[in-house]
Length: 540
Image 1 (tube, rainbow, N blue to C red):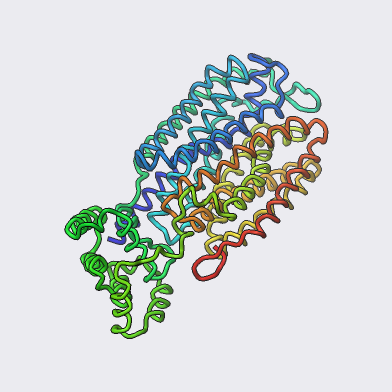
Image 2: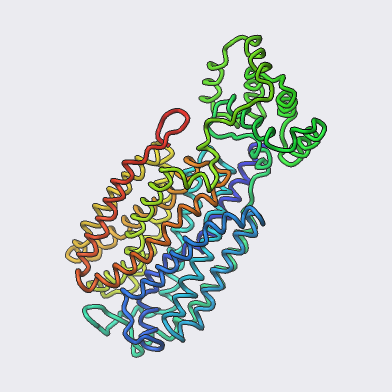
């Protein structure tokens, strides 16, 4: 049973990784920027398009993702994780395929198809595989979410190489220079392949998404988990939550109906007969915390509790059976709602939490560095490196570090806490941004190392934020809650695009580096104010 559950959980993680590999190709925009911008300058409009202005494609993608992620959570509740993931993924692929036509028309239409449509589809599908994976392995939220979003970070490792090999197989460098920035022209013989690249990418994405979506499902025990919260709550609190849910439902009016509904729960969730005994005791008010503890610690249900929780609960309920029974009988069905509400907060409830707005602001500030590095690392590298294949290779290896970073930071948060991990993340990113200007002096080797380290660092936001959301507000409404948190990207993307397009010509590359590092340092200060604790009084 345990082996089968873990195997099925691994399949869900694999499906999530496969979907995220395609969704994560949003990071190939940094590699595609010279090709797309140069093509529009030569064959479409406007003819004076710059790299700084092209960042609006990536910005609109981020805005679309921020707007639709909340919708993805709502759709998942209505049509399930599999169809929701498939719907969002295929909408994203459709945007890529349509760009074959729109890139021949104008930059504005490309912003809609390769930007907004791409991001809107990513947003719908993004959180669902993460939520499914964490429910299959709730004891390793950080590591599991890190593995899934590693696919998102690793997508560009594969497709950066495919794009460059297809568009520029002869490794030609851009020669036309305008205001110190180089662009490809018709004479280079590179740009003719650009539209067809979108057909190749769109077809590959759709195939990967179809396979991956079929594996994304919630575990069967989710039916029972609606009644019994198995997160870090004491045994007595878990039973109180079960009783409170029963009391709030129609089941309380009919004992026969209650039993019939529970049999349905058993068939759906494969709950053991010992838990049926527990249910029978709870609805007839004959249970005691000692009996509950014995059932919870049984061989078949011990997975619901960690050893530490079992031991602490056993010490907590060392009172005599007689005293506990009398206390329970006196309270009858008058059960108060569990105090640990942070474990199951609804979307409307998290909007009243200070911690939500702190996380939202941290995500917004970190987004500035993510946008800048993701889109312009290659454009900056071209100012002193005349090797297009090398720059594509940098992007590919940066994608590996992007993927590995999500696992690393998620695991680090499991070992320490979200607060410690995020503070370290922001501090390292700030230092790297302050020193990236030295790469133009040191040359290729340092540029390669610094870009990889920057991707390794900023990737942490995409594993730490899901972990913080699940730990702070619970897993029940995770997809919708994380969608609300991700709305910060609706703001951070246009801010980043405006700042880059308006200020780069004024303050130059080095001024942009210092500005982005300032945002990261502000995020570090904001993280220091985050003070959510778990049931043991420790930082989440």
